[in-house]
Image 1 (cartoon, chains in turn yellow, purple):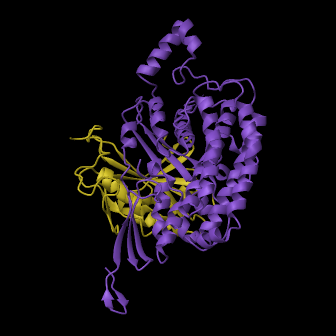
Image 2 (cartoon, one colour):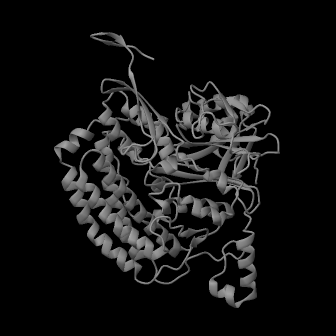
Image 3 (cartoon, chains in turn brown, red):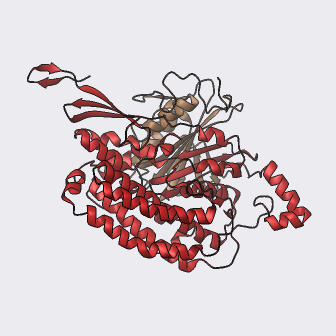
Length: 158
Length: 398
């Protein structure tokens, strides 16, 4: 993975100028920019990216968790953002420890995150604080375990 | 639970379960409706009845093996899924697909879009009572499936696109078949429009129904015709072109009324634009040329090479037993499927099996907006709203 601390992307520059602590790392791979945000800054960064008129990242395409078991921090949450008027994509990444995989919900910023976060909770066990209805969405309600975790066998338990 | 004031005193709303087995929910979708008489107070979609763990299974298979799984995600537009996955893998590995293969991909993907919109129109119409439209649409879809069978060997789950291009050389005479089909299609689309567009019943059942403002649509992450009928000009083929779509001349169709009738008009217009693209592709496809990139170690050798040279045999063996290992990294590749933004997030750790594959299914996200469309309207409008959202449960649940 190439990592360029310089982050020539103007959006990254705006983020850095606003709050240098919000940008822990910038990754540039295959023309896509990923900004690693420390989890306590996620909500503020999201509101900034949505609220600033010249940025306007109003569209959350996708919220993808990745389980890096047994590495730590175990979980990576990828927020795929899109600014319709800039015609630009940006990815935010938050790293969560396996012992306590919890982060603030962004449903107050992008309501579409509701079901994405439910899916992340259902399949990975990541908790989203402030989510209006954090229940299982794909698996049956009484299912135990989080199937997409790497320590959950692909053939299941039966 | 809310209380409702009636002439006989306060009472609770009725909770009615719509689905998962229901002819109008287009699959195993369950919608829990809270009703006051016939008015829907609250609608809550419950999904997961078709969850088959595709994403988990992909982690256990090599990249080429995953392609057959992708067909089954949006089963009405299987080539779209193949395309999204292959483009993501090609982006990750940095393979340049030959132009001929790109044009053939565009042609087949637009044919799939046509087939998918035909199913949408047929099922949406029959839900609202227009039964003949269903049969006409499926008659045309038969022709499309016959072409897909001729080209790839399979009517629906084609798996025809591979990483680097196509799976096989297309058979002789297939372009003439496509030409015959698209010569007849405009007349057929006119026929559907004649039956529906100015039909009083159709207008009464779709105009003003399922209103979704542009602001709500963007906030809910809605994509595809649902978003464009609310006036937002976002079509990935235009905004982030892929597979040489920027070389084709077509229009992005939008509407401003934000209701089901507008979505109907947008999708029918899209069908006509697809025909335009197919016509251009027919002229552009060179009759000779490679159908797959040359990249030993990533793209398997041809059958002839495998049978006559030792290197071909070795590569073939290594590739089909072990697979190839892309560099570590993550990519997100989105395409404009008939339902909206179909995105594939692929994370590789340098092993031959993908570390994580996530399919951002448009129907999953569009379905989340269903309560916004249905609430406050009659139950009968819920059927219209589900139809106009054009969901495929395979995508929703994966």
